[in-house]
Length: 115
Image 1: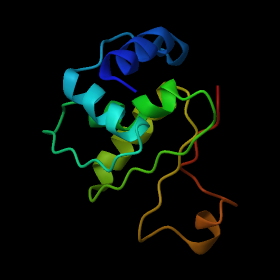
Image 2 (image 1 turned 180 degrees about the horizontal axis):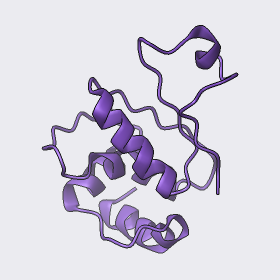
Image 3 (image 1 turned 45 degrees about the horizontal axis):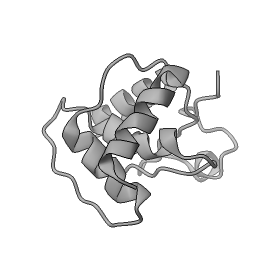
């Protein structure tokens, strides 16, 4: 899928998730790589909008999909969970401190339920 198509699909669907801002060119490039099945590694500065980079492909997909975000920073995970919950996504945080029961999904305190 062309980057211009990714951008236009995102622009059409972002209101469904309460997103009122435009995606940056770098975010669209990352999403385009993912949608086209290519491996992608993006090095973006803190505060750039990395969370949106990860989920644009999920927003524009026609069928349900899973986006996995791996982060070394607990505070960053909390920030991403907060953003994703505001956008209406189901999400969970799993860390080294997460119990086996939480990992199985029985009591995960960080799960976000659809609005």
